[in-house]
Image 1 (spheres, rainbow, N blue to C red):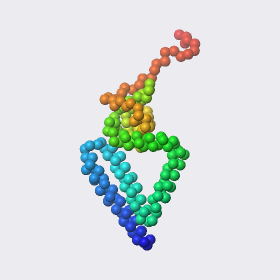
Image 2 (image 1 turned 90 degrees about the horizontal axis):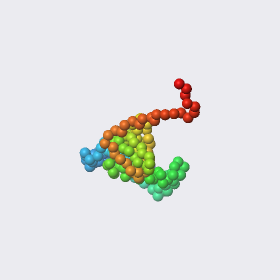
Image 3 (image 1 turned 135 degrees about the vertical axis):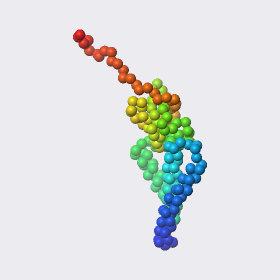
Length: 182
């Protein structure tokens, strides 16, 4: 095939991407109408965009004569190097898997107040964001806690009915040292 023909097909694929994206968005809207909240709908649309872009890219590359087998080897090698270089591969994969579980499970949503029980400790906060790698909580005192998805899924999570009360700073009864003179 000539290069001009390949360029024309590539341009057609690029121009059809927004149309296919709009079509899949309408199909998603029809499938989930009123069933999930706005945040989960946004994440589903993002996931659809990524999948559609990946499929379109693969189709264009195959059309240009590039074998996907070589790209898969290259991609998996780069992914493995990135995983080893930045963080443990099990942590990355477990956080992504936990994200998919949280996406399907509809018990915790953005805006809910939760208490995560971790042994003798507990973390309370309002869910601000549920991302691919972690859940962002805002404590009642205003502090933000970034909690990994894999721990969020494996630890007991209490969904609170009301906002917890702010923590009070402990009063110091006596400072170590000599007693103050009156």
